[in-house]
Amino acid sequence: MPMTITEKILAKAARKKSVTPGENIWLNVDTLMTHDVCGPPTIQIWKDEFGEKARIWDKNKLVIFPDHYIYTSDKHAIRNVDILRKFASDYNLPNYYDVGTARYKGVCHIALAEEGFNRPGTVLIGTDSHTCTAGAFGLFATGVGNTDAAFVLGTGKIWEKVPESMQFIFDGNMPDYLTAKDLILHVLGEITTDGATYRAMEFSGQAIQSLNVDERMTLTNMAVEAGGMNGIIAADAVIEDYLKGKTQQPYEILQSDPDARYHSKYRFDVEKLEPVVAKPHSPDNRDTVRKVQGTPLTRAYIGSCTGGKLTDFIHAAKILKGRRVVIPTFVVPASTSIARKLKSETYEGQRLIDILTDSGCVLAPSSCAACLGGPADTIGRSIDNDVVISTTNRNFPGRMGSKNAGIFLASPLTVAASALKGAITDPREFLQ
Image (cartoon, rainbow, N blue to C red; front, side):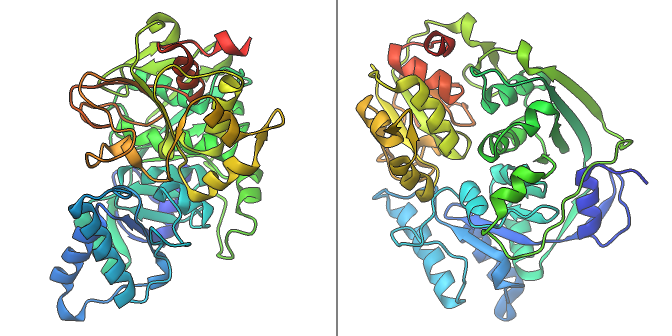
């Protein structure tokens, strides 16, 4: 029976020869991830439901990252990290990456990749909607609520309905003024924020295979903005090369069958696309940069699991080198590893960190920071009447702080270009 890559992974996890969309199955989970926002309630539910005999099904498969509400004096945020710290100590957890220590890694979705937990052909469940980021490695990754996560914590299993798959094919060679962020914002504009509800979004085509790991993660990260259950890209040599030295655990590279059935298919020629933004207050409120060019801005933000990867900062450096921003511009590396690489990686002979700081950007510690708004002392957090251009993944009212701020989502190229002029600017102006 022909199957898509998502169906094959789910069949494998359910120990079945095949599965079909709409079928309900028990999945054996390979990795469970949680963080400081959802970890404490997940732990409490697990204790309440499993009682005195509560046991973690497999400590080696549980991964915990404080990353959302950190670098703050907020007592509630500090309490949440304290709960995780005690839980990790009480149960001697090997994969707890505590903030304030040498083990701290940064944003969970990027740290999962860097620490080798994203293995092709596996099932990764996380208490965060952007867990779908990991699908860039050819695995099934989805976000769940605290109750479902608590059940996984105690049993290693989860009950899921097999999703229908949608296929998004990108043909052509990527122009230098386009990034993966432009591609996914274009998709969102086409299908809207509920266009893939409870479906798998599978990305393929010449342009996709040409993308590096960072860019692939941007695509799958924002599948959930279309309501997708998961985003996925078949693993290839690019992924296998990335995984070298990161994991000794087994994995399996799976591909969709040529005659697999899809709910729908979309095809795009990247050479005919242009830079886009998502206007306030929804990720699907797409428009071309050209049409909104000149919109005044009060601040810019380059960071998050979507836009704070090394490739994102290289894109920004192409625009910022030798120039100065004219509005407050915040740079937040998604991981501590990326933060270190900013000091060693160069663009045209100059260190990335020097390009960013010389241009006037404010460099912040690796974390989710203002992407989720956070406590009042969160760096980069928007205030009333702000108009922000950001590489983050959501622009709902209040998402980055004030409910009275307007947020435009864009690629790091567009954000950097706009920071230089204090208004939305087409990056092609600086790339010519």
